[in-house]
Length: 185
Image 1 (cartoon, rainbow, N blue to C red):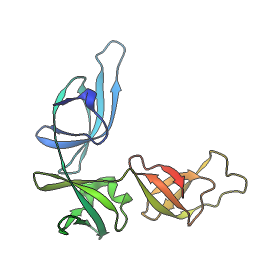
Image 2: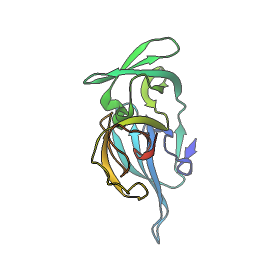
Image 3: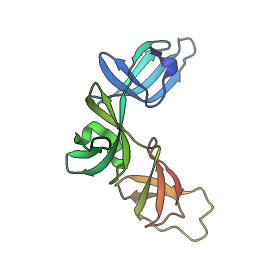
């Protein structure tokens, strides 16, 4: 059993008979009221995201997921296709079930497929991915030291904020948990 004090991003709990993954959480305390835990949780079977407030100390059943090393092969209009690295079996998953994670996938990327009782539920991405900048406005000479940011689109289609010195064709590292720029390679 886990309680709201154990919440962390990526924790999988059983709530209302279904597996939910904690996406975001915040401990909230009003002046004369009892502290509560605000959380965004994702139903791992349907992909729907719920914002919910739990009482501090509320307890949940901890779910242990089976992780299988897999390789992302390709995606078509509706599905993402993966190959199990142990038995080379291929599985396809509807993109809406993966949510925002599909934006970070690139061909031949190694991920962990998460299974519960032999049912595929989701994937676990690496902490960061390397992507190529496909379009951005040009920076101005001399702006390489400032902390100003500009919008850029990367090879997977994500638009994010990057420093002014990053230009088209550069390879950058992006944090998969927050979707933020980390460094230029």
